[in-house]
Amino acid sequence: MKDQEVLERIRNGDETALQYLYKQHYRMMLRLVLKNSGTEEEAQDVFQDSLILFWQKVHQPDFQLTSKISTYLYSVCYNLWRKELEKKSRLSREEKDEAVTEDWDKQERIQIIHACINKLGTTCKKILQYYYFDELSMHDIAQVMGFSNADTAKTKKYKCKKELDELIKKHYKATDFLD
Image (cartoon, rainbow, N blue to C red; front, side, top):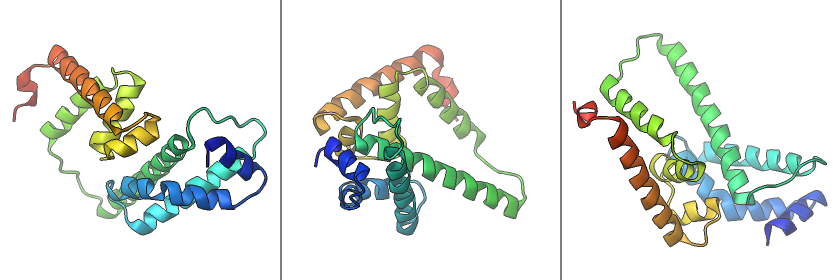
């Protein structure tokens, strides 16, 4: 089914369109949640919530889809899961009520990398986020980003990584990364 047909079916109240979306995209959303400290049950809940939000949005008169459905659903899932993790983190901190003992050097390196990633273009930011932090496969990245195939995603990831390396070398010294 093409995206336009799915949208029309949803607008007409055809719930089989949701079943189709579930079958098509659940595996990708499951990987997202599992790779980010979640369980299969949590992935199901998050994806269900994402589908409900998508259904509601499609029924709004001013709704216009500006990306592929897979990209839209992935973004919604990603944001819902991040909120859930933040909520869990807050609860955990309240229960422990103790000082956070983190490796500050590692945190500083991560901040440097994130600062440089934020200087990249939107496409590069997304590709590197999906690959390194969400641990998506090249096939999944190609699907989410709307690329023709995994090889295209791999090539773009390589170029983005090279650009990131150059930014880091330009703005920071090697000693900033040594223990």
